Image (cartoon, rainbow over all chains, first blue to last red; front, side, top):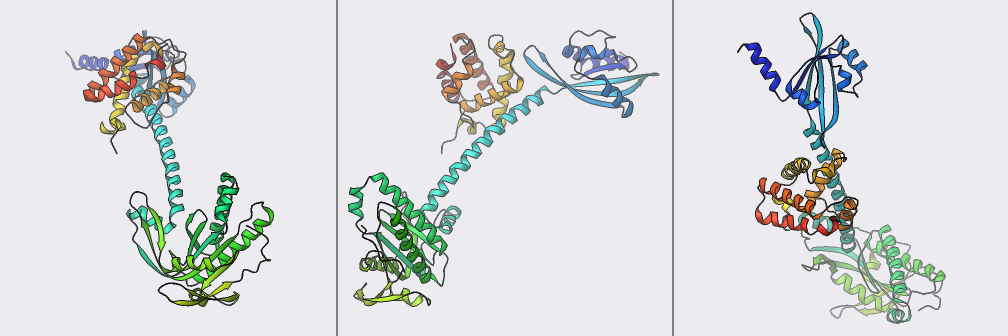
Length: 350
Length: 118
């Protein structure tokens, strides 16, 4: 068999569709078996436009004249399968006659893969969005339970190291007559009002650098000077507490349910830590918290009582009234003070 | 957390081969293939990708309601469902999925028969 014959055999058998076009007439001069397999029964001499109705001959002619090549794609169905074939035209000479060599590659699989990747990436993107949303929910929930810096330590290292914060100021607030209020009013209303009030307290606290540690029933505990140390922790706690009272006072003027609180503030050391393994909670304990809780008992309704350590940290401008001596812990007796909030006299509230 | 079959068999890079093989077999089959006669290629591929992914616990899950709606207008009979099940089983087996896992996947498929068959 001659080399030419072998070449022709090869050309006929390869998995690439090959055809030769007369460039004067745009009629088929030759095609191999693969080409016929894809494009049906083709006769030599058939015009290109009969084969590819969607192919515009003008840009093809222009491109072949200018660059000597042109590439496009065509899509058609073989039975129920969508075939996509990439067509590459290259200008050549058959002896003296100008011809175009048309090479066709079956890119159906690539198209199918592209579709599959599209489909898959859309699924993954949707899942990613959902996971992100869930992560945000979890983050929000955890941030309700612990300060951001503690949360970041927890997510980075998986644990929170118990830490001593000294000195800080603890605010301990509760509501007078809360048990009776719970019985008197609709539970939904009470919870919704508490939500409002605690959200407002959180916002006020944030303005002065105080962070809420816990709000359980009618107890609200916030700290100043932690997790980031702050020299003015006493003033921060005093400022926030005064605003808590003013806020409640203002709220009571326009709301049917009147809320009366009392506040204790104490300065000193505390330990902050995540407590619990399965059901964990970030908690703060130590003298400042215990003393603040004690002091709150000494506060009249809508009043703030602070210890001498807090009083000593306060700058000019706060008005303090000594209210007597209180036994705090270890039989130590110390002078405590009422912090004026400069509000109108409390109305008949409960 | 327990691995899904999707993860166990190598995730998308392996499942994609199962999907394309299943696609070929479905179109070549004269019982099931005609359902795809007038359906665009990208839609069939999308459907197959989600179909296999959801059966193997990948990142797609159809609700029963969606499955029912998608097949509501198609005259699918038990014989068609059986044929698809057979093709699915063979394809998974040819791709080296263990018999136990094939049972799980085909079981998930079978449990939707009532939603698809007229």
